Amino acid sequence: MIDRENELAQLQQAADSPPRLVILRGRRRVGKSFLLDRSLAERRGVFFQADEQSEQAHLDLLAREAARLLPSNPPLRFDDWDAALRFLGDQAAQAPLVVVLDEFQWLWQAQPFLDSIVQRHWDSWERAGTPITLILSGSALTMMEKLLDHSSPLFGRAQYRPLLLPLDFRQAAEFAGPKLSAQEKLERYAVLGGVPQYQVWGGRGYVRDVIADRILVKDQALHEEPLHLVRAEQQIRDPGTYFAMVSAIAHGATRPSEIANRTGLELPNLLKMLSRLAELGYVELRHPISVRPENKRSVYRLCDPFFRFWFRFVFPNRSLLARGRVQEVLATIERDFDTFMGGAFEDCCREWVGRYATSEQAPSCEELGAWWSRDGQVEIDITGMTRSSYVLLGSCKWNQQAPAQVVGKLLEHRDFLGARAGRAKLMIFARGFAPQLVERARDEDVTLISAEALFA
Image 1 (cartoon, rainbow, N blue to C red):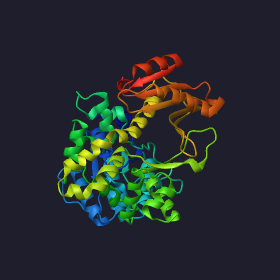
Image 2 (cartoon, helix red, strand yellow):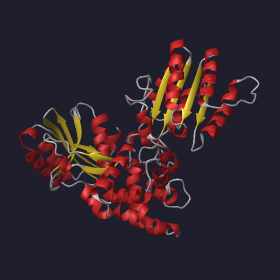
Image 3 (cartoon, rainbow, N blue to C red):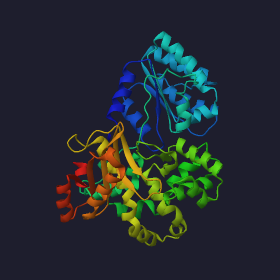
Image 4 (tube, rainbow, N blue to C red):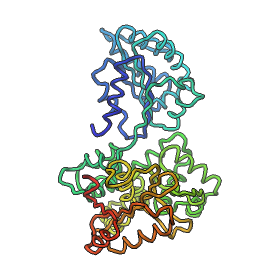
């Protein structure tokens, strides 16, 4: 178990103090089922994972699992959800019971009134003090969010509502082999991201081996994973168009007009589809951290590192890979990899500032992100604000030896922002620093953070 200690403790507490209703959300592969199994495996319970079947097929499978609660394990059948939930409530009345309905969205799709049915039984259990812990878990984020909406029959009833997120770069590094350097751990994160299942499928080795053996080779689990995920989303009707949009973003089209030009989509349709991708957690709309926010400067980006890597390098080379020309594609990736690493390194540095840096290393920020001018000529990789002042400005360079000019450019950026940035702490992040940069940074009171320091 890597990270997740808080979620594990909360789930176990819910199981130990029934009646409790838990609604667990998280994208596919993020480890929801693994967490539930680890948290509740020793409890008396019914663990049912749904899939894309009919209502009666779900009920038949649930009956088979629920029959394990009965001493002689006789045949059991549920004709509807009322019968199923009534049986589970009766079993809980005899001894505390944990009921997990995993991938709940499939059950709900097969029976559109299931949320109301669950609400009716839950209210009865809660009034009676029935010792049951009911956990509804799902990966269709939009649907699961509806369970928490004020218009939902279950609104206000869930005592614990965790959203399970991917791991950050330091947590994901625990999947790597013990001999990997800080640079190699960052490179693995840039490719595989923080989704636990991707780290498991990728193995524990060096990033080149992960790419060559686990991603570029046909029939490997990671080879077409993004295609499978997008096709499986219930809200997506034309996956090919969405692939083109995501690919455009991965190749640097970040504004709606740029994405429209590359895909040929009309802007109103494009914006609706971008909104849908954002709801599903695949893209995000970023705003510059600024004292004067302007929507015209907002940009879209892919949220998941693996999606960024896959749509940049694998998606456009599928024909070559289908013919087994792995080494040819690998050579293309290696030529462009340092450029690709720039954005991922920035993300890791911002994460470190916000989560791991001590107060001596970096000031506390109410808002943390990046800043860029309207014309894109000035970009500040890390920007931290408190109220209406800039308290932190940082530059991230994926260089083995960052040159002294980086200090001068950072000072120019501070001057460009004016008086509100006059007292901002200045920081430079890089794999290593040229001696001239170290000397000038000392003179200008600029803090230097190496790749190794991100893991200290």
